Each structure stands twice: as structure tokens, then as C-alpha cells.
Amino acid sequence: MPNQEELALVLPEEESMAEEAAAPNSPFQEINREEDAGAAFVLESKGKWFHAGFHLTTAIVGPTILTLPYAFRGLGWWVGFLCLTAMGVVTFYSYYLMSLVLDHCEKAGRRHIRFRELAADVLGSGWMFYFVIFIQTAINTGISIGAILLAGQCLQIMYSNLFENGALKLYHFIAMVTVIMILLSQFPSFHSLRHINLGSLVLSLAYTFIVVAACINAGASKNAPPRDYSLESAASSRVFSAFTSISIIASIYGNGILPEIQATLAPPAAGKMVKGLIMCYAVIFLTFYSAAVSGYWVFGNKSNSNILNSLMPDEGPPLAPVWLVGPAIVFVLLQLFAIGLVYSQVAYEIMERKSADASKGIFSKRNLIPRIILRSLYVIVCGFFAAMLPFFGDISAVVGAIGFIPLDFVLPMLLYNITHKPKKSSLAYWVNNSIIVVFTCVGILGAFSSIRKLVQDAKEFKLFSSDVVD
Image (tube, rainbow, N blue to C red; front, top):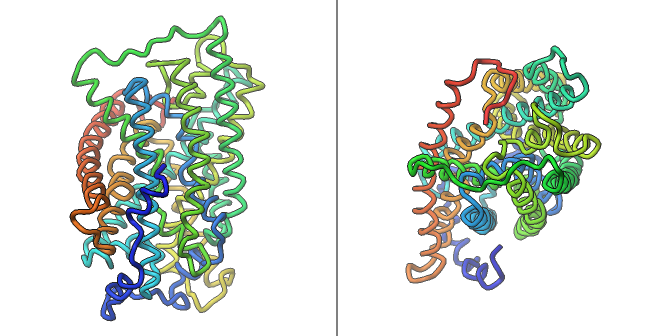
């Protein structure tokens, strides 16, 4: 995490910047929320800084951390640690810059509440508006599918341990999760999720520490698997696995909805987001490293894309007591509902901007009926794809490469350089441009390797399989 001296490199000269940015003929002036139902309802601005911290933590610290041992198996110990730490530093720095850009625009009279409008305003390009919509849609839909899939898998794990020869398949549990998500999707606004997301933060700490304890128990037991940390023998396979692992780590750190989260803050929002970021990254430090180290220590290059499956294998005795792993699975399941809700908000905002009437009440018949229909259809589509294509680890890698890397590792630096105009001789300028170049290359290579693995796994599985592929 950057220290105060590093952050000082990018502190803006606010007064002069505000004057430059206050372009009177900008195509994206501050939103009139009285006419914009998406802004007035879904992105209502009532939150405090710790509410933003709850939202951020739910968006970043989720059960995807259980894939970290799986990511390490493509990198090894030292490169895995290096990538995990580098991604953490870069994303904190990136989100910090993004909050400065948003604060800068707000002081100039243009408070942006949507990533797509911020990018189009600063970059002055209409196509950027649609590019960000496309990327955010890929992220939000991919994570919604992944959340439903992993929640269904949690139910399947509990069921298979209670009924060894039970007849229910994975897609049955996905259907159950989809029904619950339809009900929960009717929370009207992002801000209305604040208490749910506080619970999500507590759940993430709880199941992480349980999984760590379970891994330590598994490593010390007589049934402990042989530890092998070797990488793949073929050089080309090692390279592809490494970039797939990097994409997975990028997706775990990413969120892609920071402007929408900052939009929930009561104005003025300046400075509040940094406090939320610090809260979030404190939780990240406690959870990410402990889950990665304990899981990879026990299972090495046999780590599953969901470490819970490694602890409770289909064949052989469980490697941790059911009474210990059981609560962790329940906590993961509960948090997945919160994550699905958070990442659906942008889709709901887009739908309600067109379908709702801001002049009517949020619970009026005119707005309630379209909300129920459209949100239910969105969740049903996500649930259908989760059941049809059970590739959880591969989905995380593809979403990280094509979604999170552009939005979280490239655009924030570019937007900062344009709005704050650091001198070309400054350290901030060169750091920002170096990050842009490096992560653009990583994103391209990661997308290629992730899609390659997804295609390979797709050949091995039938549609609506009852197992999640690694």
C-alpha cells in the first residue's frame, strides 16, 4: 500500500485544475437527478465513508479469494507473492487516483456517478462511453454468473455430505440460488445494501479464518496430500498458466464500479472514498495472504479452483472436520448473495434509467412492476448461464483479463494524467504510463491464455454438468 510520501506525488493543485476542467460546453454536465431515475433511485447519494468501505469490501473481498491457491499453482511461491503484492499496491494506487479524478470533476461542477460518463467526459470520446458500458456489462454479468454458480456449488457440497448418493445435481442448486437472488434483487438502491454489505465484510473475515484453520488442520493430518510446488514441465504451458493466474489475481482485486460506489456518498464526496479504501485494504491484507499461503502450502499444484473442494474431496476422506468447514461454506453462501447484489447495481441502473419514471415514487406501481420484471429476467439469464457453463476458475480469469485490467489498471492512470496533467518530468507521470503499458500487455496476454483455457475446458464438459471444472 502506498505511503503518504508516495501519495503526495499525485496530490492535485485543486484550484487551477477546477478552473481548467469547468468547461461550460462539456457534453456531460452534472446529472439532473430529478429526471434521471437510474441516478435518483439506484444510485441515491446518502451514504457515509464507511458505507463506501462496506460496498468496496463486498465488491473485492469475496469467495474468489478461495481461488488464490489455484492462482499460485501457475506461479509458484515467490512469483505468486510478488504478483499478489504488486496487484495490491497498483490497485490501491489506481483506486486512489480514480477518487481524485472524481473529486476533481465534482469541484469543477460535474459530479459523475457513472464510470462510462466520467470516461467519456474526460477523454472527450463518445465511443469510450460505449466501451466502458461493454466492459462493465462483461464484468457485472460475469461476476453475477460466477456468484450464482459458486453459491450453487456450496449447496451441492453441503448436500453431498449429508446425502452421499443424493439425486440432485448442480443445476438444481443453481436454480434454488437463482430464486433467492430474484427476491433479493428487489432492494431498490445501492445505498439500501449498506447493512447487507457490513454483514458481508464480517462473513469474509469469518470464513477466511475458518478456511485457514481447516488448511492447517489438513496439512498436519495423516491424510495430508503430498506437497508438490513444481510448475508445469512444458515452457509454453508454464507461460499460459502464469498469465491465466495473473488474470485471476487481477479479477480478485478488481471491482470496475468505483465511480458508482462513490456515487452513493452524500455530497460533497471529496476525501471520503480514501477512508473507505483504507478500510477495504485492511480487510484485503488480512484475508488474501492468509488464504493464499495456507491453501497453497497444503495442496500445492493440486489446488482446486475452490479450496473448499480440496478440503472436502469427492473421493477419499475429508481433510478437515465437517463441523469446521460446514460453517465456512454457509458463510460463503451468504456472502455470495451480497456480491451478486452489488455487481447487479450497474445493470439495474441502466435498466431503470429507461424504464422508471423519476417523477413517481420509488415504490409506486408505475416503477415497481417494471423493476420486478426486468430484475427478475436479468437474474434468470445469469442463473441459466451459470448452470449451462460451470467453469468458475476460467470465468474469473477471462473476466479479469478483458474486464478488470482495462478498467482498474489502465483507465484510472489515463484519466488522472489528462485531468491533473502531471509534468512529464515527474515521477507520477512515468509511474502512471509504465503501469498503463505493462498492464495493457498483461491484459492482452492474459485474455489470450484465459480464453484458450476456457475453450480447452469447454471441450471436456457437457452442458449443465454437475461438476465445476478446474
